[in-house]
Length: 186
Image (cartoon, rainbow, N blue to C red):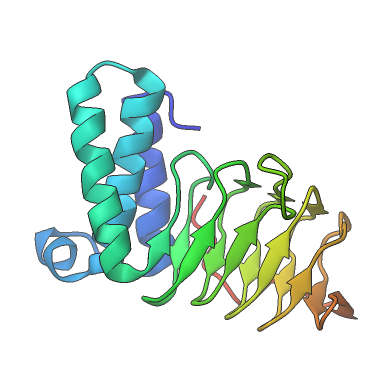
């Protein structure tokens, strides 16, 4: 969680590296996903430090507007450093979810709760890859270095690490894990 300007700088750098984005103004001005992530991290800083409520309100407005344009519904304070959103398109994340460092998300991902329970959201470990169309929901735990395959539906715990999940319902289909699928920045 971002608690200082140093944390903010560390999260932003980790996100930039995970996205494979070069530094500089031109990249910021032309990459909508990077701009969204920068707004998300700045909002997290403002919410956690709580210095300027007006700035928080403006950042929340900007994040919502950028999210609508890109198809993202990602609340603040869910992801650790090194978030990498691969493509524009629908991504929905519940505010109660907790995701560790170096997570790569693809289009069509849904990280949510069980129907009728607003706080029953997943906890996902560090260095996880979540493939296109994957659905992860419920009060479950996903371990470190887990790769979730395209269109998998994960509704049960997989606390062991270094595995690949796939299918409906998801099961372990490989012992490979997420190594090679993401750039570890943090």
